[in-house]
Image (cartoon, rainbow, N blue to C red; front, side):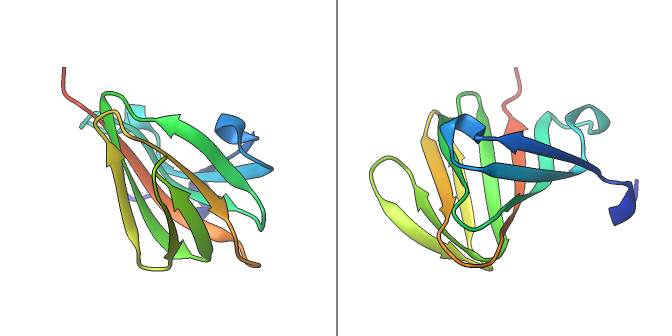
Length: 117
């Protein structure tokens, strides 16, 4: 399946997971379109100062691939600055949050894969 950029569904979530501002989702594919167990396959866009609050990944793994911008990622213990080309894996009950700390939009390609039952 090929989906053109202009065919992708856009969604805006306000104060996601207790974060600040809006997060724009551009869904490449929805979970029900995929054969493998997957809950999310989308580009996330956080404008300057926006964030996704701390949340835990039970029974799933989330991969962030940073496309552009600068963010501060917290795993509850350490904070790390992430930029274009960085990849983050969170799962197995771990938690994380991310905030755009730059002046330009923080763009992240995110995939949430659920564990087989």
